[in-house]
Image 1 (cartoon, rainbow, N blue to C red):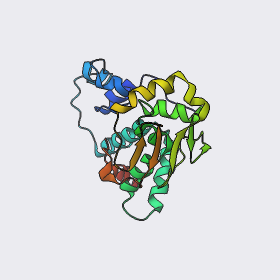
Image 2 (cartoon, one colour):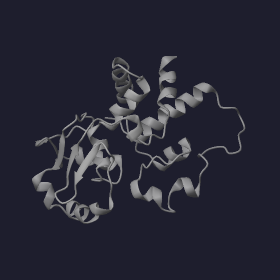
Image 3 (cartoon, helix red, strand yellow):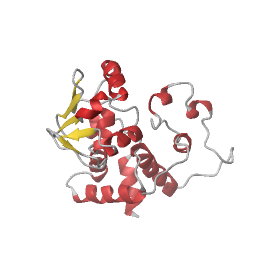
Length: 207
């Protein structure tokens, strides 16, 4: 499957916001947005940004944040449209329910891309079963654990030492002693610090 392979720091500069694409590095002085805040390309342009461009930028920020390709993102948007309620909020909840995002939210990885790799390599168990599909949507009551053989890796041992300093969102719980996470409830838009506007994304796809 196609995947963005260029520098992810360009995506943050293009969006004009920190999207936490490189984990803890984004919080250090090495962050490209802090060092070179302007997007790459010609500087000093004063051309007015159209409404369509603003809508596209919001949609791209959501895609970049969760690491989705356009087809994947559009499929999730269609699913959000079919649900009752506000489409923009439904979309945000669906994005948060992805297994790779939950692994990231539990603190098992520094970034969503790293969390996706952990899932794809079979290190993560969902309700006692190995699940290597990052897009799998978790449900209330689901339990996320580590594969037994993965607990012997150096990465797991390092994570067990550093997990105490990490906190999780209110819709999740984490047993820091055994590195076991659980979905207490489905997330709500208020639980999530979104970097994009769901309403603007709905406007983009409505044209």
